[in-house]
Length: 118
Image (cartoon, rainbow, N blue to C red; front, side):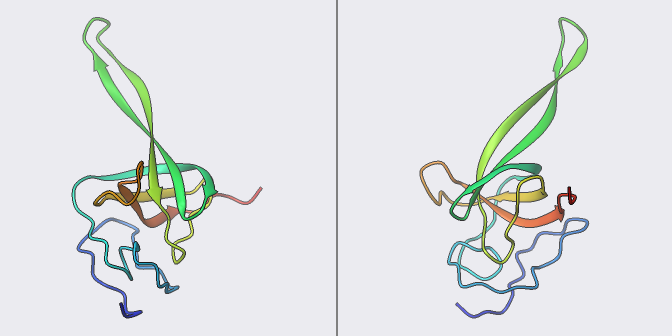
């Protein structure tokens, strides 16, 4: 596919197309992968795999017995294209795609906030 940036049809505050280009077929901006379904914002907790990151998201669940909320966490594996290159500690936006690997069905769309230095 060409190196031109595609319009993926997602409007999110602070989300811009990446400045770098890549030739990754699984990139939503430069490749052939379509983003559909759910969108989540979360924090990258691991970035040790090749082009894959683990994103942790926190959410609240109402417990009727105690009439209060409890905090829960879930970890999601997401494809990390080289043009985005999310690192540990970054706040990222991920979107659902077709299954890309055995445990990967999400792709990093963009970095909302880079991790602080130090």
